[in-house]
Length: 494
Image 1 (cartoon, rainbow, N blue to C red):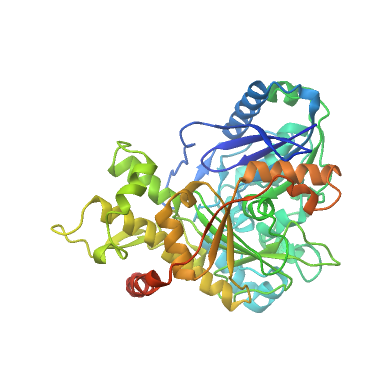
Image 2 (image 1 turned 30 degrees about the horizontal axis):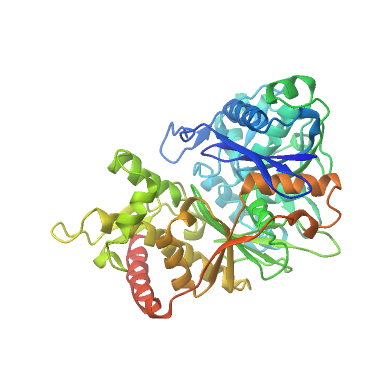
């Protein structure tokens, strides 16, 4: 018996085939092998073609099935993790009407801010826990205002994971946590945010049907099954945004637990039992995957858009792919803590919520041509990413999310010893790395939604710590001093 998980990211789509009884990964694959393009037709815009997600999901699924030799009918359930906050719009015939406006797109900031001001900060925050900012609701408002012909044709709007599931099943459905990620959920009344929909002029018929996170959400059609290399009728039994799913994959389900990831963007995600918010909406509060009315669970999310994308920009544009990421990590260690005074602001991938939707861009400061070389450049970039995350962590702490241990998958920026050491030493928190990723978490979620796992803890069979990184007391003072210099530069840039 096997479970299949998909992780729809902005760089690739990954599939993971998991043995349901042992929790062992049987096969995994991702496509494309180089990063998916993000189109930017205007400054601050970020778009992807939803059909490209589907093509890469099919290739990844076919590959894991071929690699494993598992019979399609042995796959009993499918789970989906997806990039959050995106917008996909389709007509009645399920034709995609325009490219998806994805998570790092900044065009809708003004529409979110206008709603925040006109509806009132207290009303918005007490009901939605977040400013609409540039999240899904505001993106749809941008389409309504700027592409009225497209808006008139919309039958349903969806999140990226809703679209992938709809391609599989023919059913357009969503989840309450998914709507909360788009600032379309009224936490006070426990329903879609009708008053925000009315303000923007959205008919409630545009909303997909709501299904539970862990439950059957449709079955593969014969056409989709053939393209994926699977069996018709296989159910989708779990769906979640990538960061709540990352937390789930790390068994972060209860208050006080913290998960982190550092792919294209960097995220720290803490679980709370309080429906609280930051008055400046610099961090976001959503329904967590483990939320129930009897035991409320909220995910407090810090996101820094410019994280792994900065590291990849250095490799692709400055180094012209002449060395590997591992070689870059080794080079960075040749520079001292603080990169000999060279500082980096790692932004430049869209408006940053943690900076109140400002977009100061990415920049290096204090460059001395006779002192600094490539090691300093790489180290300053990685330290700058950690400094930006720490800046947001302090906001999270102000809304009651404690930080003692950080759990993360051993992937992306967490493969860098320098990145891990900087984060541990600056925060003072131990970092636990696990043998998991988003696609594996989605597969485990599918098993829980199917009922194969009777409890959440049953779903984590086979999950274990691969490495623990403890803070080094002798280095903490140097990191703190470097952060103070970085913070002074940031303050001048805003």
